[in-house]
Image (cartoon, rainbow, N blue to C red; front, top):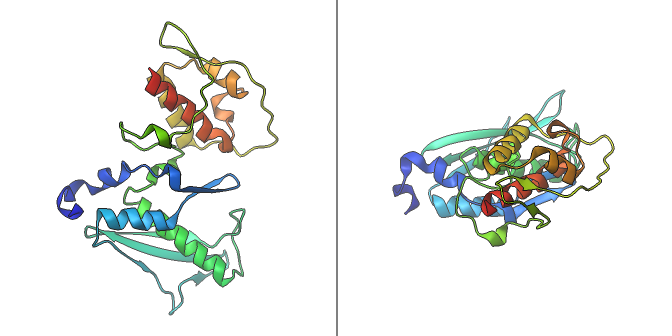
Length: 222
């Protein structure tokens, strides 16, 4: 039974699970499929439970700033909760949401509450791969356009890329990319040239996953 193998370190075990194939994307936003999150959580800890918090008997709280839901998940006796605003398809707060909107936000809050326990947490830090050194290569879809050199430095061809007012990567994503560059010995200038970016700080958020995949591929090839 999973609860007996590493009760004091369950977070680390959950964080190692690769959830990439179950990530759903809507526009530039990524979400983990909630049925998969529940399935993996229950496989790891059959005693895990969750509850949708009630506000005067309702599963949501309506305020002047918007409508909020909260889900608390308990894993191996540890309860962590996640408050989530009810949003539209562009992640904007809804003041008058439908029942469907509220239900969708409850599912998202559930997934994020599960992530607080480790499962899929890396998604929200902008990382595209978990902290496991033994991933199935079939789960990693990368581009193979690379020019390797005798040294450990990886070189990339030039390619133009045009963006108009993109949303840029987060601080955590930038930190993670710099870490991968250092670990793989990647030539930063060539990397920027390949993707058509003028600096790491100006990488569009929608392109972060592709950059990380390329760097992870270099780490495997090193």
